[in-house]
Image 1 (tube, rainbow, N blue to C red):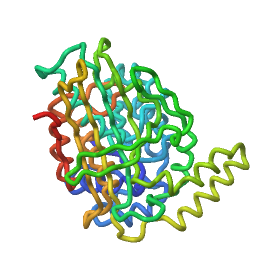
Image 2 (image 1 turned 90 degrees about the horizontal axis):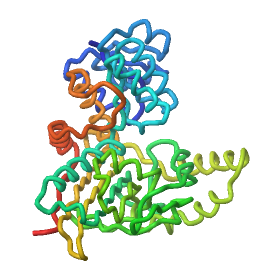
Image 3 (image 1 turned 90 degrees about the vertical axis):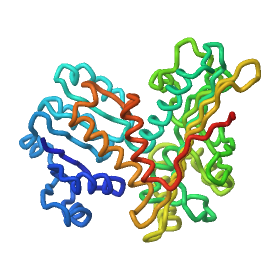
Length: 380
């Protein structure tokens, strides 16, 4: 049983090294083998130049294909896994094309596991834990009004004037500013064309409480079913979004104005110019610590009275183990690989598990990766 780990970018290395150090049979595939050797050459020589054809030749039933490559590779690698009776793992969101492979995967008896990084990933585990606890509590009542918030952000440990720093090309962040979102606000669907149209503040109940700017991203609505919300629950608020340092919107005001005007090829070219400049001006310095803050909040109210309210909070930063982002993305991926190998994840397409035993096990280990991890109860 071989783990075929494809891609050795910045967010891949800690989890990959963990698997190698644990003695798993791991074949490492990268488009530039020399870069992979720099990162893990002290642990293995089983490093290959990434090639779908060559991977297909070496893939055996019950192997695991791991894609830490750009998202446009995921479906092709998942199909390759199905055809060879192998499992598949990625940290990325489940695309419609990936979802469409569900029955094929079930028929082949293989698991296609996605959304097992940081966000998506750890946020899902926190949500599953809170929803399960609430649903089993004496406070549960189908007539309660439910508010759910999930905010995650990678931010500089030492704030800079731009209120943000980049670990890799800023282009993805800039493109995301042009993306619409859908959430629930005051019991109604809330559609937003641009993040800055939905900015608000969030007081995070960290070890030292801190105020951040937040905004919704993507389409939050499908996650109500994923998080096992009852179809009859009265959902007042449901939002999954991004967290930024306080003052971010002011520092980025000119960026928002320009991004709004960009269109077509000329707009894409200008985005690339902006990306290059931001990388020059606001990239992390060598060894500079990053920071990751994740807060998942579930509250139930009835007749204006809070019946149940807890927040799962995590605060982590770079240290002598490397960046917080890298370990919080790649370690859960390694947990998912081992779970798939051990038959703990059912065949078909799935996201981070809701199984209570897996959630507890993973979150216990994630606690060692963060400097602060806590479930905060807002009611005595």
